[in-house]
Length: 105
Image (cartoon, rainbow, N blue to C red; front, side, top):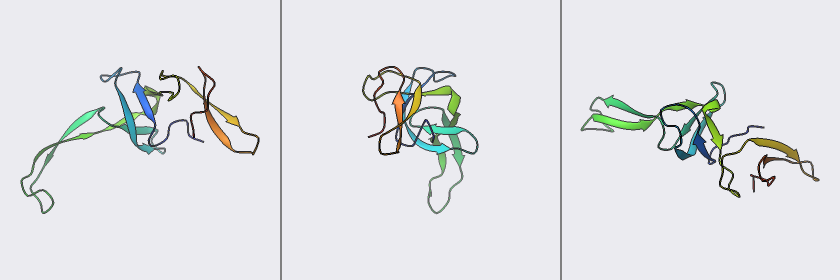
């Protein structure tokens, strides 16, 4: 079970965007990277094409290593480490280490 999933709110804890919060748009488990909304903005110089007849410079989010982000608990609104707990019905759920509440719905 992954500790960070698509749709989670995370905070960057290292690098040039340290302190920024954003929603996870994509998780790349093979390379241990995540793409976070508004973090690690790259400028792509796009040639004119059918999709972009104007061409120009496009700003887009680049991947950031998963060790440089930390999950923000929706209950206590603080960045926290995540543990995995087993429920009575046998399902696994992610748990905030600070407040002890389940992160998953």
